[in-house]
Image (cartoon, rainbow, N blue to C red; front, side, top):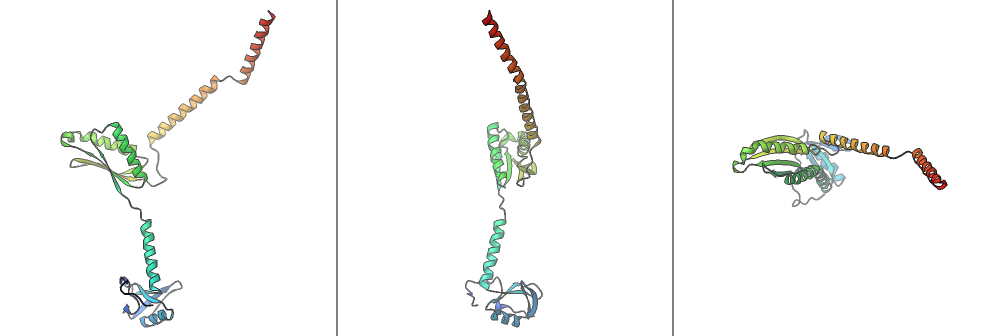
Length: 229
């Protein structure tokens, strides 16, 4: 096959570019070592190309294939590998040492979304000026943040002070393996017990069918008595 050298990126040696005395030809049926001249003749008979795919092997490994088809297959494999690679981004969440509850919950929600999307989270507290005196308060804030995100991410680095910033790193948990925190389990248990107690109280307040019938008979008897009088 005639190769357009302008388009060829010379990534692979083909045909007469192969200078080795002998090569190993691999195919779906196996492999065999033959002189390079014989391998070239085999390629010509098939109207294909002799392509060196492993030049550092001894002897070099080649395939007899249409070179354009071979390049297409290589590009397709590279594209598939790239698509399978998960691109992990690092999202930043910034706090002050005295962040209020509303702002905290707002940033907590964003962190949950970042971790659910498979991204890492770098949360930090920035100490401006004399606020460095509240570094213990910043550490408590970051530890609370990590605890509240226990279902969504795992701690890669505990709070660490670097200059005027204290950092905490979180990585996403794998999908389907996130566990509920003990606090949430306890809360759900209390809610279930409360709901069960409410149902029991309602049942006790409702009279049984016998009670309803007895009340009805009593009302009829009372009405009859009043009528007789």
